[in-house]
Image (cartoon, rainbow, N blue to C red; front, top):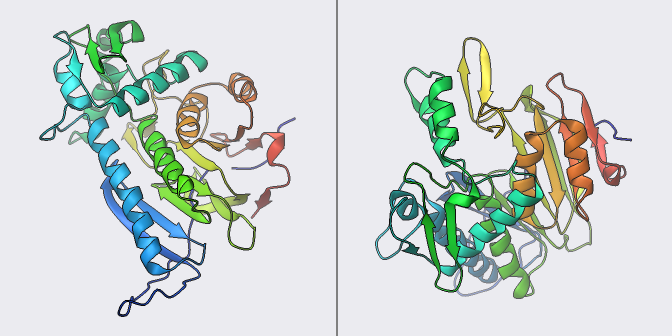
Length: 343
């Protein structure tokens, strides 16, 4: 039986550290902000009591990975010396494009998640998502026409995407189709960064990529981090807190990126079945170790009714979920019973 609760950002303690000379003082808590990757602000925080030099070196690892993946997955810009997702989309209907093997890995991961979610998390929806993006960015904002959406909806599906893992090439067979990794890319890159730190033996860190949280280990005293879950109907206030460690916490909600027209708020999360924004929930939060999986499932479950979403969540091991309804009612999976504190 699901219980009451709610959606997600970590508010870490920021400690400004001044490094004097060549000494390596131990610092209890320190944070660094990284800008411009995945159109959000990322904060790397250490609660490990490590020295400033080690912390800065770890931040560089995270930043380098996020920069690489941001450029590989960018659908709006190309970059010198590489073929990225923008290049792949621009060459839709043409010859295969040779890309970084890491982009191939993201695409294959996304295909698996599309299959596992019954198509609810589908990166081939670029033709439809671009219409909604243009509508949100327009002055004044407007709704895409039903005719345009139906036309765009004919140009999506993984059967239009040819991935050659051996030769590291990608080809979109339909010239009107395109790929958009917005539902999984940031989470995937965050997980790669977290794994890189873990391989170094790092623990006691939190990567907060625009609200996509990845906790590495625990604090030095063995305790977890308290994550605030926001009210979608009143995002300036928290509904509750969840204590997490060595896991990811990712929220999908329609209260930050949306289009408002005719007194109705339309989120950026599009239901593949209707081609319109999903209205099932106010927000959905997924808690599981892999940040890429959490990102993908948060999108998929947001676009499903509660019963179907619960069945999907329960089909995975070690995945927990929080739902907040449009009327403010709150449900969660029973594995979170002892980790939640209502405010």
